[in-house]
Image 1 (cartoon, rainbow, N blue to C red):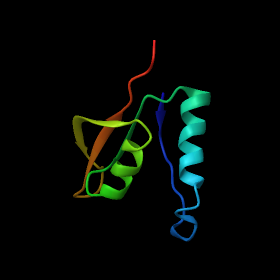
Image 2: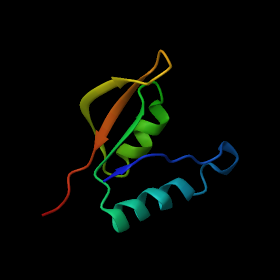
Image 3: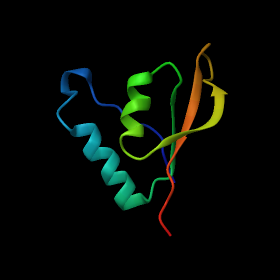
Image 4: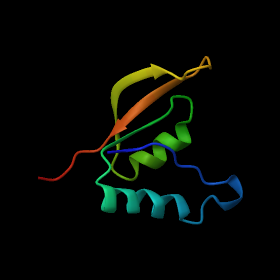
Length: 77
């Protein structure tokens, strides 16, 4: 499974909401990967702190000049 969309309004940043949402997705849906904008280094660091790692996959974001990068987490057997 993947996280398709996760957004926390800037007004609510640093209150643990995003962390709770990611952990919920990992526990309930066994989320394995997600995509985020390559230039969004804050998001990449956030996801890395929750066990996701860049895996080298990259693709254009449709309708924009931006690129998405994939982050993946290893699941325990």
